[in-house]
Figure 1 (cartoon, rainbow, N blue to C red):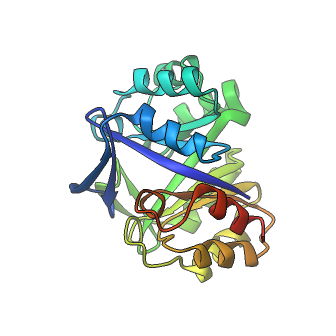
Figure 2: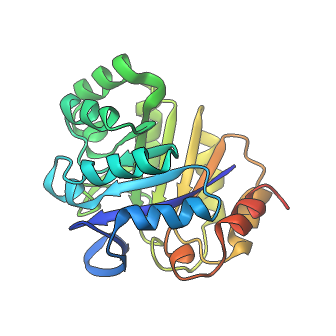
Length: 242
């Protein structure tokens, strides 16, 4: 499994939100590039970046920040936030990201999803963001009645093989992960998925590694790293069972 340090970009700065609430944010770095540099120098093998302005506005806003990170640091990046058209997906790939993450678009525009899979299949991830087990969209600002497990099943029938699963209720809370939920998602996903939400201690990562789910490919961690709960190196070691 891979540890993915998270960099959420809002108004040109690296921030973290609590439960996806734009009104409850903490600014950790004035420069997303410097936030990324810190994680890479600490041993990060891959970065997870979210364009929060893009998620809120419906189209990418911070691609130049992403371009700087990819160009100057040479680390692979997966990017989500506001990728709701094929042109936006192309623009993200053109700045050098390794993988694009579709959220709202995958739920509301199946034709776009099909187009993206047709053009860039191995580079497309779908983000399943859940509150109380039901899907949230539009940068976590809108809730639906769609059970997350049902959406995963539907998307797999359309050819999706890679997911990010985020527990929005636990995001930014540092209160631990829901291992039963991770097991349920692992039972449904036929490809690979990355988990996000609630990691606060190394024991959370050890517990995820202890599930021994072969389709769980990594864990996204944000606030716990920024708050110094553990290092990138120690977090990666925990996921590898060391």
